[in-house]
Length: 453
Image 1 (cartoon, helix red, strand yellow):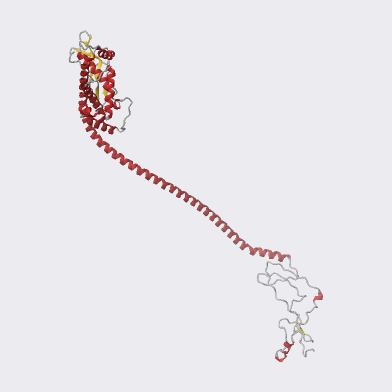
Image 2 (cartoon, rainbow, N blue to C red):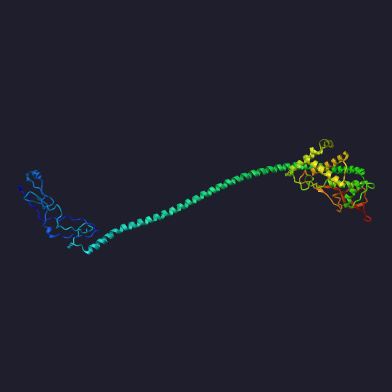
C-alpha cells in the first residue's frame, strides 16, 4: 500500500563537488579514467525503511531528509533513494599538487603537465637537502667518535699492557730485593764472625807471642840437654865397645870412611868419642823436619795454632818423665809417638854398629835420656808456627864462624879452620838468632898452609 505522502525531490538539483584532497607535493597528480556512460544513469535501489520507523516518525509529519546528500528522493512505494551513499560513477578522482599556501592548482586539462612534475621533483630535492646535510654531519660526527673511541681503546690496551709489565717487573724487583736482603744478612753474619775471629786471633797472637818466648827459652835449654845426652850415650857406647873387640871398631871406621877419617881407640880415644857422637847425632836427627820423624808423614791436626798447642802440652807431659816410670810402665803408656820413635832409633843404631848383644841397663838409660832429649827438641821446634828449622852442614863446606862452632878449636889455637870435615851436632834457626852447629874441620898453618888436624 502506497504511503499517503511522498518525499519531495531535493531542493538543489546540482551536485556539490567533493572537498578538495590535500596532496603532498611529493606526489604527482593521478587522473582516474571516466566510466562508461551507462553507469551515469545507474541509480541505487531505494533503501526500504522499517515500518515501525515510519509510524514512529516525528510529529507534524516531519519528513526524513538527508541534510548533506541533497539528492535523495522518495518513491511512491514508500522507499527512500539516496544517490550520495557512495561516490557516483561519473565523479572523477584526481590528485593534484598543492602549493606552499595549500591552494589547489588545477590545470585546464585533467592530466598534469611535465612542468609540474619537474617542479615537484625539484621541490622535493630542495626540501631534502637540509636533512641530508644534517645526516652527513651526524655521520661524520659518528665516524669521529668511532675513531676517537678506537684510539682510546688502543691506548687503554697499551696502558693495560704496560701496567701488567710494570707489575711483573715490580714483582721481579721485589723477589730480587728479598734475595739481596738474605745475602746481606748472610754477609753481615759472616763479617761479624770474621770480626770475632780476628779479635780472637789477635788475642791468641798476643798470647802466642808470649808463649813463643817461653817456647824459645825451653827450646834452647832442650838443645843443650840433647847434646849432653847424646855425648853421654857415645861415652857409654865407647865403654861397651872395648868389651866387644875389634870388629866394632872396624864397623865405626867403615862409617867414617866417606869423611876420610881414621880413628884409633888406643892412640886418640877423644877423637873416637867425637866421631861417634857425630854418628849418633846424625842418626837421631834424621827426618827432624817431618811429623814424628817420619818422612812424608801427614799432620793429624790441620790448624797450625792448635797443633802448636798440642805439641807444647806433650812437651810438658814428657819433660818430667823419668827412667823409673819408664821401667814400671813403659814409654807407650805416656806417648805412643815417642815410644815408636825410641824403637825406631834403637833399631837404626843397632843395625849401624852391628850390635849383637843385649843392652845393659846403664846403656839403655843413656839411650832413653838421649832419645827423650831429642824428642823434646822436636816437640818444642814444632810448638811455634812456622816451626824452627834445623841447620845442617855437609863435608867440604867452608867454615863460617857465624853458623858453626869448631869442637877442636881449643886444642888447635895456632891453626885456622879451613873446611868442614864432619858435622858433630846440628844447629837451629831461632827467628833472628841461630844456634850454631858443631863441626870438626880441616886446618891449615898460617906459615906453610899445610893441612893438619
